[in-house]
Amino acid sequence: MLGQGSRGEAGSQPCRARVTSWCWCWGLGSSCPMASVTQHHIQKGQNCFLLLYATSPEDSGEEQSSRLFQFHKDGFLVLEQFFSAEECDSMRSQIQRIVAGMEVPPHCRTAFSTREEEQLQAQGSSDYFLTSGDKIRFFFEKGVLDEKGNFLIPKEKSISKIGHALHAYDPVFKQITHSPKVQELGRKLGLEKPVVVQSMYIFKQPGIGGEVTPHQDATFLHTEPLGRILGFWIALEDATQENGCLWFIPGSHTNGITRRMVRAASGASTCVEFVGSEPAYDDKQFIPLPISKGGLILIHGEVVHKSELNSSESSRHAFTFHVMEAKGTTWSKENWLQPTPELPFPSLYT
Ligand SMILES: O=C(O)CCC(=O)C(=O)O
Ligand SMILES: [Fe+2]
Image 1 (cartoon, protein in one colour):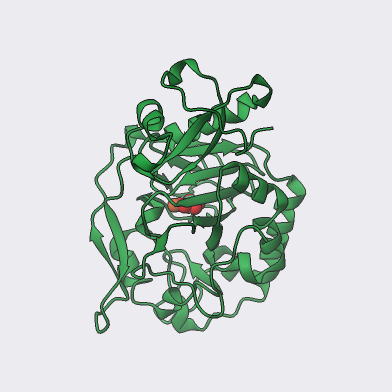
Image 2 (cartoon, protein in one colour):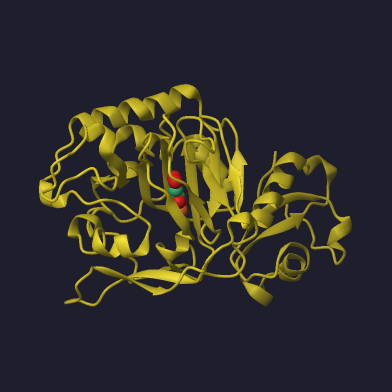
């Protein structure tokens, strides 16, 4: 079984060694005995995973090692059938119950978007968004509300996402987030003190589910140093190119971030603002990652990813949560999302 335990010696000739074990390297630089191997063999970035080379063949776990190698290389990893159909259905049923009981005052009905201008207009000016980190709140697609916040289409078809604390306050999502297999994966990833910072249920409604423009999650969830954020994205239905699966730029997680969303100074007209800008990526750099219901995609906090408008007739529901390795990490006080006395970021390992 692959684990963190078998710390083999760092060979000076890593290419000849067999990669059988690994841990998360937090960019410890020269104090890390494996740093030279990492830099030589994996990537040049400061924040990267560190492969360890096992000394004994019994430790193998080659398949998992090669998957992890792929994760380090690409910045994302697909784990098919991580959750069962029943687990996916239980999340879907639970969200139906939550939506049935939804009450959102008209003035709180804001559209969710990752387009910068819209974000500043809608989320950025909205306290409803800014204080949603420790709540279960509802965000809507563009064009589904009139000026007074009345629904133009049935409300259950108008929701874009629910966030940002299902993992803490809803029993079904809490159980999934902290499920033994997620915890085991965290341990295999070498996470020592992982905390859950946010969660979202994303609907990608048929016909109107909006695009999520290219971004890096660390733009919104900034840490010092970088490299401490990991997204868990769970397909609750088959995600295809037609209904808006995720797309990634492989290897784009190694060059830091280009943009940050920060809390604006008090008195500003919006609650958040952007510092820096997202480069214009070439569409050809992205690869689609279709995945079946129950699949899990691990998303490195700095990998560039997006999803397109869902113009199909099938929805594309997903549950996603983000974890931070809290050991030796500072959460930015400028992030829109802040831990609160009611909800300090909970440990993944509970
Ligand atoms: O589900 C999507 O379309 C986008 C999700 C995403 O960007 C994320 O979970 O980090
Ligand atoms: Fe994202």
